Image (cartoon, rainbow, N blue to C red; front, side, top):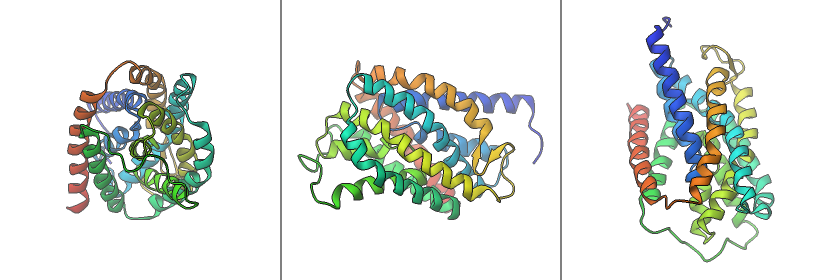
Amino acid sequence: MELLTNTQITLLIIGVILAAGLGGILAGLLGVGGGIVIVPVLFWVFTFLDFDPMLAMPVAVATSLATIIATAFSSARAHHKRGAVDMALVKRWGPWMAAGALLGGAVAGLVDAGALMLVFGLVGLAVSVNLARTNTLVLAPELPKGKAGQPALAGAIGTVSAMMGIGGGTLGVPILTAFSVPVHRAVGTASAFGLIIGIPAVISLIVAGLRVEGLPPLSLGYVNLVAAAIIVPISTFMAPRGAKLAHALDPKWVKRAFAVFLTITSLRMLWTALT
């Protein structure tokens, strides 16, 4: 790979900084998780650097998950202070979600990167449609009471989120609100899911990438330490600001604007995977 010019390096750093700030705010404001922004930005950054897209995608996923651990801690603490985290649900779902994340991280480190792009693109489109909805989708008046229902939901959230490089909020919030959990409580509770998903998924992706050649410099497995070092302090700083806004604003128009961004991003990801 050729060395980058100072201008290219500057533009890339600015892009990662902006993604980190926006990701942190969205993690707290909408509960969608910063990874839904960070993954595509990191993917385009690494491909711009002429890294193989088949390596760029798992690196983006793994690095995003590593940063989400810090962001989720900051966001969850802010929501917990406001009494918006359902700790009983977090404890009940935690083991199943962690197992799903461990599986999803292992799959993300082993499958063709095109499969990860397809998963991200398809789920991203579904999330964007949900964000653009005028009314919250409600499937039932309460969470499933059967023995398999809630573990299945938790495991699915963990698996898919780990494969996409996102925190639990992106899928956790719409799923919880679909079962009539109040939106602020869903956002607060889902912010804690990021820790449960991030830690086992990152471990899987570090192990899977240890012997892979051609990764960006200063990578630990698939986790790029340089990008993570830039993103973590910014996203951690911004997440509580987003949480504060979540309790002060009606995020309807922010949701719709983000839905447009996510639709475009998801379509580009699908195009890259299929061409």
